[in-house]
Length: 151
View (cartoon, rainbow, N blue to C red):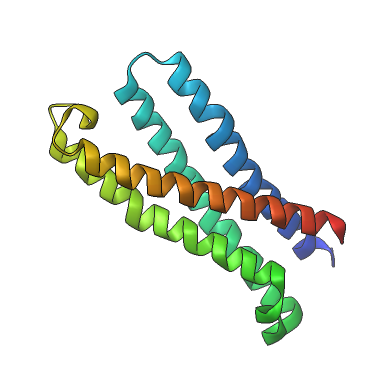
């Protein structure tokens, strides 16, 4: 039982980073390939990313709290802590900044698809920024997993 918090930290890391890679680089590309209706595929992908965002918030918060409980203020000087903070900031920015912004652009475009609307250029820009943020979070997550398994 004394190792339970550490085991939960390992599971949180696995769930968060595994989810990032599985959803972003497997499920969503397959969804867009298999679903001819791009608007429906985009809506489903958005729901998957939203759920994954909430998972990231829960897992990231636990990981930070666990490190602080383990090492106190010294946690703030650890590379793993800082990587987790960066990942959590990215997920918060995406969840509460970028995703709502893109959803608003889609809503303003109705009844047209956003790609067929006057908002297409702005949507592409924000989607590109969101994709870069997701890639950065995925790479930081890979670093987190590699460093965790080395110890």
